[in-house]
Length: 404
Length: 98
Image (tube, rainbow over all chains, first blue to last red; front, side):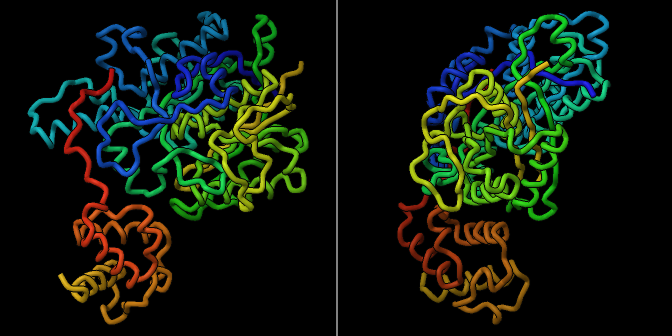
């Protein structure tokens, strides 16, 4: 079976608009959560989010291109360009045929639709520009990246709420491993901070009025975030042949459905996805040294996830470092798996594991080895990154240090 | 508005939500008695917000697990309108971010 490795990555997030800035913030434990500035949130029960700051779209796209790009697509394309440049991959005509783009998004161009619906129903606007449909479609990032780089292999978008990006990266990994693709750009992007969507999240009563404190006893709910992360995946063989730097091997992927409830997660479903990821890559549980948790900071998720981790790793659990980096970049929904995969592989490569910020107090219901507030220096052999979606759809990626 | 009218309206919302006769909903009936899970409970709170035209803060919701607790909570909100979170801007005016 072919080995699949990550040779490039790009990030746009509340804690940095490229991978280097992102890593600096992460390793310093610096949170990007703050007052929402891009839309008026007067009267909303929560005021904070992980907002992308200082992102100058006009520096990346000309005016004509921007007409067709929702913010979620802007973030995704910018991250994909960075990943491709970072990897140094040259797409020959043959490689283009065997390269695809697989992206995750929960909401697609919701920001565009929100504004247009406001004008339609609120202002009784009579005519629409023809840009709305292409801006709003959830596959916009996959399509734009495929067109920009001429990549004509299997290309599509997964939408499984908060697991979207892990499902996307997992599909890309499997398609390369089985030989349907030789290389892929994969990841996720999301721009959920429009008023209509914030209002909908308010109704779920799971968003913290304060900040995101995963696994802390005083946690008070999730905090939304926006951004994107994209990766270049290719076979280990091609990466070695062209002398590319290798961040990590994607070693396993596991999926499951709770088959239980729309919003109450089940530990057995989460545990099943983690076990599947380990089995898929023939990864010994004792080689896992770090878990980038789903860790939304809701009461339900964090207790459930802690139980699930114990179900899988048993008495080895205290020896595994755990953090939820959502405490710094927020919950980016369909981009979450990708941004957190970036945190995981950068941590593995740099020998420094990113912390769980905003942690105040140990919770007996979350009895894990939490990396509280400050990064730890540790070279781990393998790691997993968890994503669990509303609707009970789980996806877990497993990464391993690459050795030939 | 009297206590009894708030209670009557709360009981009506409960009975219509669960499609059970009003006499089956008593002041000490809990969400759990009616077999409501967390998501059902969230939806029922929304129906109550609509009925009374109030915004119930998250921390109030946590103390509303029975008919009498809901009646007390709503009465308190009606008496303290300043404690309700606002309803937000009518419409954001910004164009989609470029």
